[in-house]
Length: 375
Image (cartoon, rainbow, N blue to C red; front, top):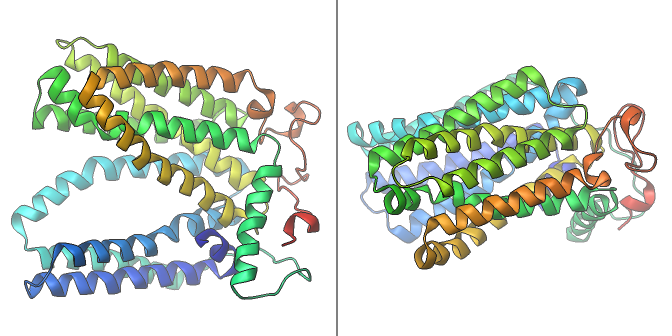
C-alpha cells in the first residue's frame, strides 16, 4: 500500500511527511526516557510507528532517482547506495556503543532527531521530480477502492512482465537462504569457532567492508549489459562464500572471515542490478509499487527464514544450514543462467532473444497499457 501511495502522491511530500512522523515518534520516546516513564510496550509501539514512517522512504527515493539519473548510470548509483549501506553497517554499531557509554538515552534520541531534521532541511531546497500521470477514466480518483486497485494494478504489472515472477522467486529464495547466514553469525562464531565478542565483531566488520568494496567496485564498473547476468554472478559468489563459511574447520576462523568478506562483497553485485533494472524498465508511474513489492518480499522472508533456521542451528549445528544454503543457492544461480527469460530480463534490445523481454519502449521505459492499469 505504501508503494501505491508513493506513486499517487508527491514524492517530496512523502519524504517530508515520513521524516515528520519519525521526528514526532522520537520526541515522544525522548520525553519518556527523560521522564523515566518508558515501558517496553510503549518503546515497541514507537519503534513500530517509526518503522512505518521510514518504510515510505525507500520506494520514494529510488523511484525519484530513476527520474533524476541517466539510465546508463543507474547501476552505478545503486552500487553507491550499497556502499553507503556497508559504511553504515560498519560504523553505526561502534558509534552507537560509544554514544551509549558517554551519553544518556534522551541525548542519543536527540541525535536521531537532528539527523531527521537535517534530511528535512535538505528536502526543502531540493526539487524531486514526479512522473507524468496518465489520465484514468476507468476508476475513481480517490478512496480505498482506488488505492486497492492501484495495488492490484502493480501486482498485475509484475506478473505480466516476462521473467519478473521468476526473478522475484529467485530473490525470495536467496533471501530465505542467506538471511540466517548473515544474521545468525554469532552462533557460528560461538559454536563452531569458540569465539566471543572480538571474533563476532571481526565477522561483522568483514561483511560491512565487503559491502563497501563491492558497492564501490560496482559504481565504477556498472555491471554486465544484462543486469540479471550481474545479479546471478553475485548470487553464485554469495553462495560460494556461505558454503565455504560452513565448510571451514574449527581451526580456520580467518577462512570464515575471508568468506564472509566475499559474501558482503557479492551483496551489492547481487542486489543493486535488480534495483537498477526496475528503475530502468518499469513505467515511472508504477515504480513505487514495484519497488515496494520487492522490499516487502525480502522484508517478510527474512524473519520467516530466521525462525526456521534457529531450531536447525540448535538441533544440527550452524554448519548444516551454511552448507545446505550454499549448495541450494549455487543451484538457484545456475538455474537462473539456464533460464533465458530470467537471464534476459531488462537486457538491451540488441542482445535480447526474440520475445524474451516484451513491452520495452525505445527509451528503456516499459510501456503500460490501459488494460493493465484497469481496476
